[in-house]
Image (cartoon, rainbow, N blue to C red; front, top):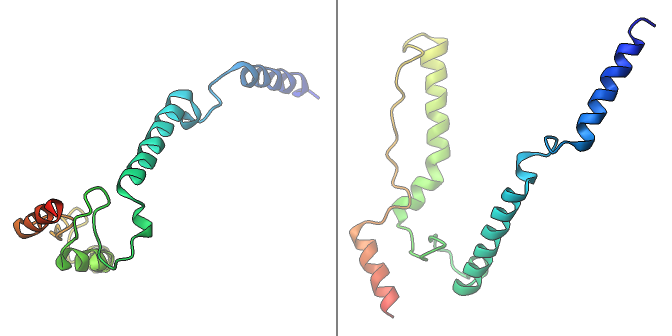
Length: 133
């Protein structure tokens, strides 16, 4: 009974704020974000129209969507094994760092240098030859 008038006042203030305020929208629902999204979708559709739909290609090669450069077998292998390498490193940190206290918690984790979607000189030549044909 004592708190009923105060509760009623708070509810009225909250309903007044939500009816007339634009603050209740998610940041991605605002007009500028929506226009940017529509522009990017339009650009993607234009690119697919110009270059062809990459999902309709009948090939087993892994290639970049924008230039259609075929990726080397080393890169394909690194993409396939990246998750397992990361999980093994995670397990190593947990076992050595947290469980057995072999390494300190703030010890630096070794960086992996996997070849990912980088073109070597040989691949660049093949790309230029394909573009000339």
